[in-house]
Length: 266
Ligand SMILES: [Fe+2]
Image (cartoon, rainbow, N blue to C red; front, side, top):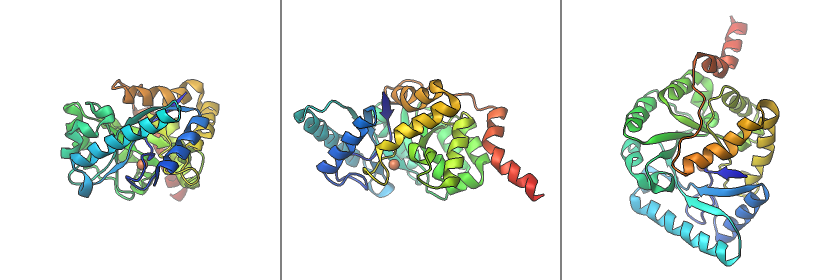
């Protein structure tokens, strides 16, 4: 069964669920889609990034678990966060309260949508040397990475792991993002698939089943299970996800579209 480690189901803490009813509707949809383990990842941004904000998120998660128990709803529910990359990132990422399960391991981070600085890899490398691992949220939706996938290749060679969004794979964000998302997955550069669910209609959990089917059809069920279930579970449990070595061949596969265009142009 699926394990989703990037979503916004906690009520009234960010731009995801706005009420307990919203959260319960999203959870109902997740369960129907075959998701049995969820880690809520509310946004953490520089101006609200104090530890106390994350402590509040953890308390809201506990409240939501109690509400589920009252209704006899079985769901393995956890709380992490999605950290926005700012100048404070390096300091914040060291604090394990922002890691999955609040214990030293992976932290989920998103870049600004049109920025992908090369030095992000250097900062992440220094964090990784001290035990903090990086899961980069939805690289396929980052315009700078799409325009220059060599930067993503640099991130991957540094050891940064990636989370690709189910909705991107099934074409919810347009053909260009879909093509890039599929290229990341096919090149072996994806570590995890997650829904980044914010609601039940625009960015829903129901994307996971067609996404799984797409990956299973093109790459096989072993890879689909790894991306949608085994790897996210490993990250959540503080283990090591399976990650294909990002070698020259993988880089060629990741860059393929850009090179084709270049040859045509010249
Ligand atoms: Fe998100």
